[in-house]
Length: 551
Image (cartoon, rainbow, N blue to C red; front, side, top):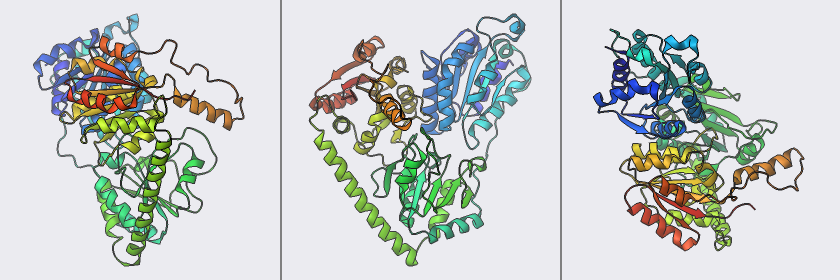
């Protein structure tokens, strides 16, 4: 058999059902093999970054390990930004790239480069298959490394001549692998003791809770503790119901502000990791002075990696959270926890009322305010819709407007790189084919991956794309204000190179050129009907909504 057959057989053995890619000449062996493997769908993108971004969200949304196929050095370079985001998101995926014939190595062929070296900084493992005899072993190892905690992308370079070499080593995959570690009972007891001693506990959660299926266990633990639950500033999942009375919201992006948000907590329970992704430096720890800091993690490598702990536990998250909850029932602690839950419910009601009051003050502004536009989008969106969010500065308002009750209701991007929303929507929709899917993106972010619209049209995916048009990089303007304040820089100047209005971007025309019908909306009363009509239509649709900026 040839190397390409072993490669394809390895994908089948590991349950791969989709390859996301942008084809090229060195990928000819893979492309030519697809007709013999009808169980594997090829999702085609016009840019390598789209393929990687879609695959990353696909991995997050259904837990499968997709394969990405890129094209030699420039194509790999195009995909590296999204590979970085996939690494930050812990997306298990195997990224491949066709490589030039190894017999041309010393002749410096066109598009040739050391692909494994290029990919190494943004993956867990990077390797080139040098002989067909290695193909089966390398692919088996690639899937293993991609999926072991903490999960993430790996890279395999596939020289075109190696794909055509003969080998007797057939594909193989490990089966019946039970790798989730059971929490140490002594560790559970020690952490339970610290929780019982706390009177003002707080929980901070990562995406690991959603990925591990521990959301219901987290809800039970937060109620047993009487603890508010904070989310990371940049998150991929809804790890905790955002309308639960114990949901506190999204943490800021510097240590001092995080510390201030956590208030006078005397115990901070970190679930998953790592924590935290900061943007600005501030001195000191992100935790209140004197607070106990406890972390539960699935990977020993990330336990106590960034912060010293008063207690740490490695273990399967559902098992660990269940064990902790079991130790908090009955007695004086349960009564105190119930009182804290009542206080949290009152705080939640008060915070919602304050938000609604602020929204009403801005309700009739023109162009539309962010609270208004999010309320109107939600009004036109089906209750069971999946939301892929890259709204950036409108993200807090989106989180207030929509109900994300469980994992799978919400996806966003990790790592801070923009352009993930439009690309990620493709992967999320393929993972949730029976649910409506809404994508909300800023206009600046959308232009990083606008080619995703063509892929959505090509594959006839029912996705509603909403582009928030404020004609600027608003987040950069906010960050420039912060920079000027923090570093005592000039604060009376304009915002250089941050406006997108000369010329203005015409998203409806762009979408039309990629096979998608769309409309532009400026009147807030037209938003909900436009969104509702888009969901009722077949295939992808785009709505460009003009909203207020920061001018």
